[in-house]
Image (cartoon, rainbow, N blue to C red; front, side):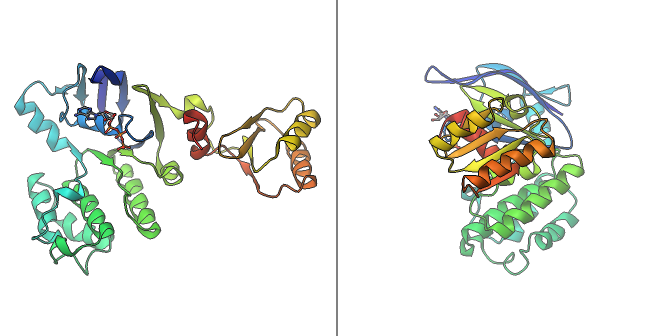
Length: 302
Ligand SMILES: Nc1ncnc2c1ncn2[C@@H]1O[C@H](COP(=O)(O)OP(=O)(O)OP(=O)(O)O)[C@@H](O)[C@H]1O
């Protein structure tokens, strides 16, 4: 378990993290979402002690803190940050990288071959990394963290440059690692993907972490809460509110209209669908608000 207690970070007098207190537990995937330059990497750097916070502390497993070098070494055996592609050595092979990581963390060496296979890297893993494509390098970086096998794993933009098949593959591995009891913290802009596997997602704004379940109660539950309509013109919206005066409607900047149908039965839902059909609106879905919608609402971006 990892706890952030009253973490504050200021750069040039600006609050990047403001009194952040939060706990991350074993067996959960945490999603961090925010526009560029908000503070996701800063938060991870604080967890790694690469940045000294102006206030607050990081506590691992209730007792360990970054109070001296010896503790830092102990914490870094338990908490790792996914390497960056610029950390790779072009002259040596992917397999050498994996061996180095495995020995640095004294993890089970069987994980090396297992991970190579699992990530489909067999055909190129013995070649120098300088010959790898962007996606191959990214898979290697991910594999390096997987073989280090730490209790807590921090991943900044893990899906960077991956094709859809590998995004799916890595998502599945994340879920598997979670079921082994790992704490995985992922900063990502791939919202549709993140939504599929993250247990808790936080938006960051003005130095604060906001659990999205608090912005949108019921977000993490699987029930019908919303009808999402694409391209609903203003006159139709006005007409809709006349026909359904009790129904809450929210218009997002990205041309999506959200109709709140929490607690509606099938008959009431049917009336709404009927209305949409009569108005030639065919691009709609009945389900729940998406992470993209919430992002759009929260950050007011198109
Ligand atoms: N060492 C530093 N010194 C001064 N300012 C910094 C430093 N590190 C980060 N910042 C600033 O802090 C803010 C947050 O940066 P951070 O890298 O944490 O954002 P991010 O949310 O990870 O962005 P991205 O999505 O682009 O990766 C930015 O405005 C950045 O310029």
